[in-house]
Amino acid sequence: MSDQIQSLAQRARSSSFVLMNASTGVKNHFLFALAERLENEKDAILRENQRDVETALLSGMKSAFIDRLLLHEKRIEEMSLGLRRVAGLPDPVGEVLEGVRRPNGLLINKVRVPLGVLAIIFEARPNVTVDSIGLAVKSGNTVLLRGSSSTIHSNRFLVALARTALKESGLPEDAVSLVESTSHEDVKTLLSLREYIDVAIPRGGAHLIQNVVEHSLIPVIETGVGNCHVYVDDPADLVMAERIILNAKTQRPSVCNAAETLLVHQAVAPVFLPLVITALREKGVEIRGCDMVKRYVPDVIPATEEDWVTEYLDLILAVKVVPDLAEAIRHINQYGTRHSEAIVTRDYTHAQEFLARIDAAVVYVNASTRFTDGEQFGMGAEIGISTQKLHARGPMGLRELTTTKFVVYGSGQVRE
Image (cartoon, rainbow, N blue to C red; front, top):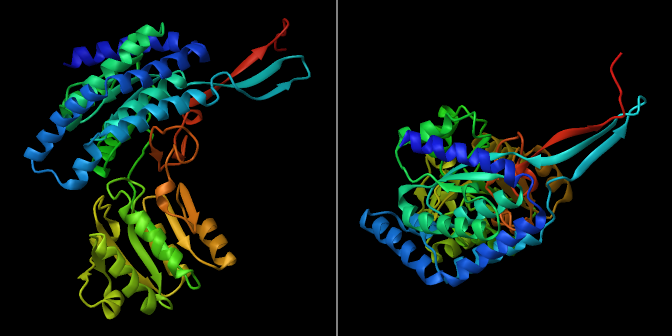
């Protein structure tokens, strides 16, 4: 299998030299062709996905995992719409970022170019397959996809549709390939192919990301782990605060931008906590609270140190009462994963201090963390949420899948 993976990478590298020079029109033709195939093959996609879901159910997987895995008609429609949105976005390739003419007459331009070959290693969610393909091709990159065994049937079918659409559009089929092996040793092989692959992007839980970081010989962009917080300040609109935390926790708890911890200022805790915990429990949320929380809602499960660091991806919420804004900021910077953090407040100064002092890719004032998403940010889709600082941070769209090079025009200049 290692020879097969190397062959896939070699063909992806060869294809990258074609795709990096493809016109915007040709790339958009592919996006529309794939979107149409998703719609026309909807029933077949659902059948393949059901095979994966049935396997997961037989394996005893939790409901949150099943939710990430599951495709239905609306999600397929969203995948198709996402491809069309990406087609409608400006093509970043070839954009001139800056230019200068030197005293010796040299014209030096800095332009956007594709990264080259991407290796995307991800878990469960088959919509990631389509989002990754669409963004990679539009930004001029070829892509090697390695999903988990839990989505093998879905991914195999979706990649086959993409390869057919590439061929129809006059682009090399090997611009998109699926690494079907689920062996950890084969993942290590993939991550060793530095001569063919330019960037590795893991998308999944902390264990997956750490494994890629530890074993990759290829530059890695870390994405995904989201221990996200909502802090309810004094003063705050408590009706707004309840609506925000309910959305951040329960709208879709199995994704990385869902809230995992609620911090509440001690001045509003006596009134707010009984109300919000009742509302959360009505949505099926299990509450794990600190000693101060138990004063106001005695029957919550006692929180432990582990609860402050856990990304539940489930209907579980850790709740803590804090004495002031400074302690809320300290707690978030200690336990957060630099993903998405929110404050609910009526105090402008408090809001600005929170924005300035929180170290995260996305920071919100009076809004749900669930908006940290490429589509919601107007990117059409995303390759993931980068929680590191180089070279991209936050939702990664088309521009984040490019790098730069200098293009220099001369008229015979030589250096003295």
